[in-house]
Length: 277
Image (cartoon, rainbow, N blue to C red; front, side):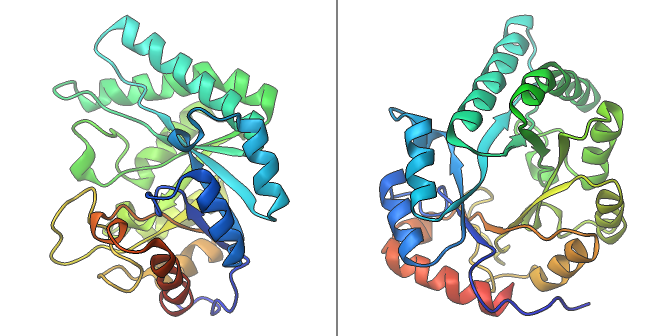
């Protein structure tokens, strides 16, 4: 299955973590000058800044604010930890509302040594606890399943199927899924799960990068699209067939690319976007 070719950058979104060396003001100016259509703001880029003012600046540059990243990390082995996680996610919802972001990406968390089922229950309970505030502000919550290599401490939600199970349990229109090719490309049930996610109208976001072979670091050695083994166009075809028509969000953690000139990197992102997405 092949998707329609990408011919412009109107659906290109870049995460601020992708161009990590740039502060938010540099990122917004460079993205706008490069005709990037959207931006996902990571919360640390708002530290020491007024989210409402940053949102106004982004919109003045014709950058669509796609999401705020990230919330989540709900599981804990203590009541105090569970309560702190819920309060942090409520803070994220208020930040998103001030920024003008319609969605928060949730990296759901896990506790080393705690049964995954316990962590998954805490994740569902934690999301349920913050849904009322999300409703108040109209903020969607996008569960991002992570690759199983992160199941020990970063996320007990490791497949689209497990993300769909949480969504089924909560059964709320503001709770859906962010599909990141880096985390889901390997899944033998990928096509069926993308179809199911689309049928239930909960495919909220689509993230792209590539899986390098060999990789030197499982967190900070993601590849630029076309540098690795993921069939990104094939997965994009699946999500679009499932009804997704939103942004293609470039989210690349890479010590190698961060060490290079970021203007050059952004140029390479645009080239790879057209050729390999």
